[in-house]
Image 1: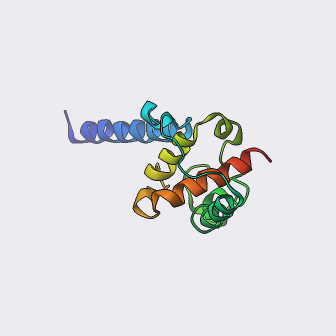
Image 2: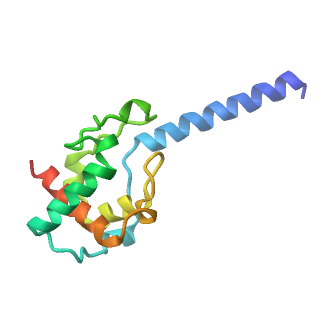
Length: 133
């Protein structure tokens, strides 16, 4: 194969991979089955929801926005939409939300490296209040 032919094939493969990656990021994010079985050890008390809100505002709202609509101040620098699907959020277990917060995806960091498990559960408790609004 000539050098221009190799370049064309390589460029085509790169564009295909980039397109598939963007589709995968844009599709619904599913936690693994074992995440569904995780039980929230933190009761959703007023104090827990308040702590979760504080943590969310500090770590999450810059992208996800105050109400989870993806309208935070950093959203312009993101390659993907950062809004939380509040309908799907209501269908997911606490364990699935905890797993997503813990492991992150794409531009969302794995918060297991940043926040203690208890703090991630507080955020889950706060997220439940977004769904009920």
